[in-house]
Length: 286
Image 1 (tube, one colour):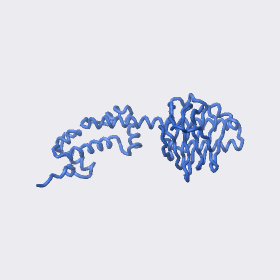
Image 2 (tube, rainbow, N blue to C red):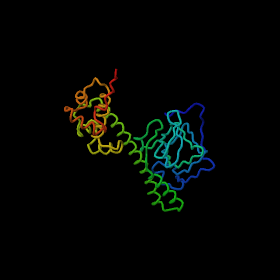
Image 3 (cartoon, rainbow, N blue to C red):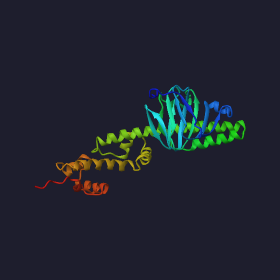
Image 4 (tube, rainbow, N blue to C red):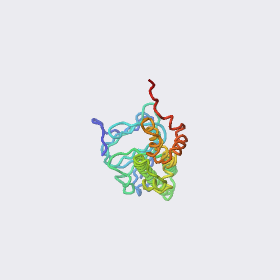
């Protein structure tokens, strides 16, 4: 479960200058069919502060613009656009707007622990990366539809859109986190065995991904291809080894997977911008 600092108490404060648009089961009964109690968009100002010690519901909160603070692992963390706060039922949590800072957020409150979201929930609050305004658009549309008293069939579509948008956002965030963990494990294994004749097939197999998926994730996370990342790791290590003058260039080349020192020297200069000799430590004179 989440942990709150000692002496914190239950706080439910919207603040005098905060503006909110929201929909609930009274105005949109179809929300109940998806387990949603209440959902909305808040333009939060100073005074907007919530501390919940034993909440009976699950909430997803996504920052669209501005800055705020979220309580995570017993400390306040600054958050920015693209930050999501997922708080399961029963898990203590807190969040608040900052003085002289605007904070635009959208949020969805589910009754209990919804089965449709159970695969994404832990026992404690989570901070996730969700870069999407889709939920904001869905909530804005639902609020507008409720204000104009659209038909039950239309309201059911808006309720379904809100729920499905939440599911998609959490699924993408989960996949991103999984990919980051896989990439970290992959590059750790590569760094421990740079002399191995790595291929794209070998890297993908070690990461447990398809070649195309590995290419896509590396480009997204590192802004370079898997093989370019392999080269970077190899030549960074080569630079470290070359700084020790006792390591011969041919030995360094072999330790990172090159059998030909000339090929190594050409590739090293292409990647690092200077020849291997420039990485040698100066020899003391006298």
